[in-house]
Length: 367
Ligand code: THG
Image 1 (spheres, protein in one colour):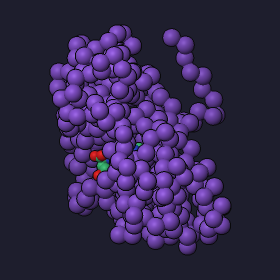
Image 2 (cartoon, helix red, strand yellow; image 1 turned 120 degrees about the vertical axis):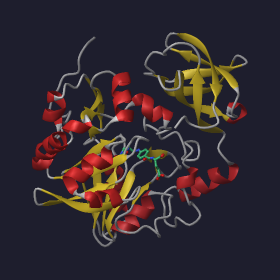
Image 3 (tube, protein in one colour; image 1 turned 180 degrees about the horizontal axis):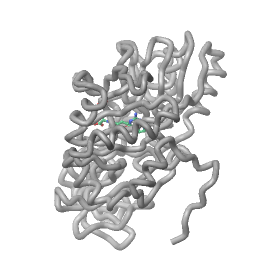
Image 4 (spheres, helix red, strand yellow; image 1 turned 45 degrees about the horizontal axis):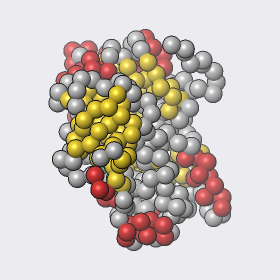
């Protein structure tokens, strides 16, 4: 296989030295930054994530910082989720849409104070869109990318590891809330969140220079907990129904097609870009939607392009993420299916890279 050449355009992270010392076997590129995808093997990493605790370099979840008197107003212009009840110390999963209602990103919004927010972005150049909106509407707000790199601590022993480093108070942080904790005299936001269903935290590491000291401290404190370097795991995130922007949805999809209608309050999200378009699609209802799908047979090959889905000889959708699940003994996958074929129990055929497979639409994700 050819390799990817490294250069300044493909950014390393404050933790890359630790990731490489831990034996990372594969990377992907996300927001023009390195994101580990495999340490031992996807299946071994999966088993370890579900049994112990892992430290993930998710620096590629870059922050778009909004600072100034119009920060809150700008944040509400960016998303159809109603932010009026959101307090400092809270995180919200927020669809971001363009003027047609198309998904531009599905980040986590972090409210630091009324006039300071972070948008923890998925893989698209959201900074450019946010700067464009801020300038186009002449808002009194600074928009930039700060030196903040999230480090996730995920898995059933995450609370124990984090308590050793930050004290028992960290156990009291509730889901999608954050509080401030000190490390080497620096105040860091620590949230109970992360791109897995195994539980855990995300540390918003402010200042690249404390990256490796924090990485090393987590491994020193967690030796007897069997802590390892890990990364977002393909199998586990499909089982949990965690969507991947650019894979499972693009700017061609509305939040409703993505099953993110529950994070939209389009009627009350006054001032949101794309509100009129979304009010129309919400009224009509989507004609395709994301669904969990079980694909029969042995382990499927990597899904590196959408796999067409057929029924009765006609295409009725596509599969965009798929993997063999050791725990469920089947191939788990995420696809976008037309309304006529999205009901649980519907039998379909998936044209994988190594041939046609029978498959069944599921009523819910596996975890
Ligand atoms: N954490 C942070 N930033 C991120 C991600 C993250 N940026 C990129 C990417 N992940 C954004 N996408 C997601 C997708 C799903 C979730 C978070 C970010 C998520 N969803 C939960 C679920 O669906 O069960 C909970 C949603 C809720 O109830 O609010 O966590 O992971 N910092």
